Image (cartoon, rainbow, N blue to C red):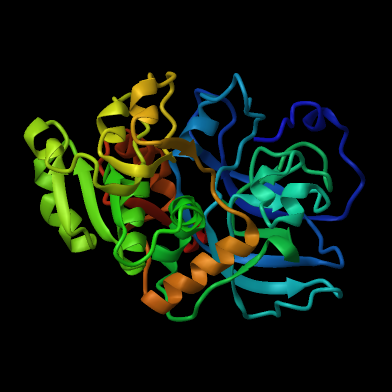
Length: 368
């Protein structure tokens, strides 16, 4: 992730703004509560979006509670939300791809330097100057960017995405993080028809991985510690379900996977899954356990296996993901909530009490 500590200390610039309703956290221990925030007036290449739905990502909790302080300290007030779907209300004079009334989306990024090697390769997420949708340096107003727990947002056209008209908007919102986070490694590791793919963990990320891998034609196997998730995994598109605590079930799949996507954020033994890879097979981490993982060298050497990580995706690939989901009618399984229940939703997420993402109906903010 980009180092934004220095940029956040810059003084605000004088710039015309308007007030937007939002929900923010005032400190690491406070509840997320109603407030108003400044949004910049349109620049030439900006798009103003009325936010209709905003997905709730586990990253929101980490940021609100400053749990990533060592590498991404939170600046308060913090307005979370990087899974944004809405309708364009205004555009700047230089905007060519959007007009008022269009459906639009914003994911985890709202800016980058657009000149580095990563940006030239359409991999803005690895740009050293990438600006996150919230808690990133705001070069327009100073301070930090504010996210999607708000009634509107203003974003440069380059970072605004088109939404297929056939998709349910509440279920589309989580695609902007959970969807691209799982789609990108599936593309990078060439998951196609007849490939055998494992998905470790059936949560917000895992359930999207199952849907996407199934749509790509892969043979999908879900690994879970919960036998009760078998029916749901099959409904989502899995061909098989393996209870990872059952060593006999695990052994049956030894040396057979082309690719395994690990979506577990808790501490776990990755070596048990590395041993299931076929020769030249890859395992990619998209979950982020707090503690370093112990990896056996022999688990890599023996089959020329590889272990890698992946982080969201670039703007071009995110648009490709949305278009793919439009063709295959894929959205996240969501529970729609009003913004007033966001603190309760956080507590439920920590207990894994949601199938499989929360999506905030931002119409509820109008009553504030």
